[in-house]
Image (cartoon, rainbow over all chains, first blue to last red; front, side, top):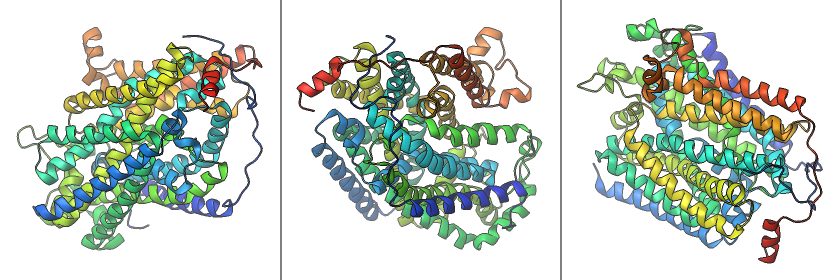
Length: 54
Length: 541
């Protein structure tokens, strides 16, 4: 297919096209999506204390 | 050579780049502006900056040349670049990186993982590794650009290399990340136009997509030595498990395709946008950009064999063989093709395209190296968070270091090294940083000790494999020969062509998981402001 010599290259070609289409469609669907609330590892009001030193 | 057209094209490009670098300089007031562009970059600019930093002369000249050698099997790398390098990177990694980076007030990739695990060691070590090894990748990018200038303009290679590095170092030095992103976006636009013309005109020369079939038909012209190594023509994958297959899949496809997820200069781009929504929007230009860049480079690279065969009865490798040593330099294939198949004006435009590709990637690399030295290694690890005001001046010193190291490597690396050196750095980043980065974003049970052990074991395994097993590097570095009297401990076996990423990444991941589960969960302490934070507040930032 597409003049390629084997299935491995044809698959790579199709997967490339699929990835581009997936990215475009996903971007359009999520264009105005609100951000989910952060699952805070460290709440913003806190600061860090380092447990180790160099 | 039409000097007037050349002067106009290069002059216009230089003026616009200089103006954008100056604009970045004018808009840079704080360390956050210098390091993460003030966290307010437009999604299209971010996508173009990400893409143009990701795709360099290395991808176009180096990997394009590799496609002329290996064939269209490199399209697997295009697929991985778009799926992992854009879709997964933006949607899965990018949004969390941006959010957690903002929560932790991280300014660099090492700072993100260091702060997530409350570890100055992680930040300092990661910063040091980036500072010491990224010049290898930067040198590969610079060689790719300089080779094109050498072939196209008949200019001395050393001079071309030096001019390249000086210009880039200057605008990164002054403009910080804002300057880098503005120039990257402009350069990304140029790259898109140049590569689109290259693709269309190549197909026009060779008869459209039916040229794939014509390329399939000349598979018998593959040199016998390559056929013996597993080559089955330029539109087919190498024989499964053959040396060429291992090199294509483990070094080129996996090394770069997976390694892209843990590239410090790319991860920091996620922290430059205002919200996660911007990253969704950036998917659209980002995916089209990478498709046009790598898809074109790899298709055209393989098709150069057909072009040269139809024109002079030789394949691409034969066109770039050294007249004395007979050793082909695959980094010269794309420049030779452009020089032969296109009119002068396109040669100049494509040269500017490559200048843009090289400069956009180099600027990101120089910035990452400078930030790693100034912020991660000096200010956070050595100065233990004090002397915030010294971050930017020391980062600027770091840029000088990056410049010098890149120049030295650029003069000394072997011919045909561009794709290999790039893949090597990507593989190292994956082995040392990816499990740690994934744990930082997605695994709350990961512990500081676990990810530190994983990072150290991944890096050590990678270095060990490079020095003593993977023959391409171990033979060049000569440590194995000095200690054991042979170029590789596994010379003559298939293991000698297995890329370090295949060994080091699983080791790093397993050690991260096992050591985390064997150590008690980290306790996040509630504390008052650190001295560094207090300094920032006092300075009104």
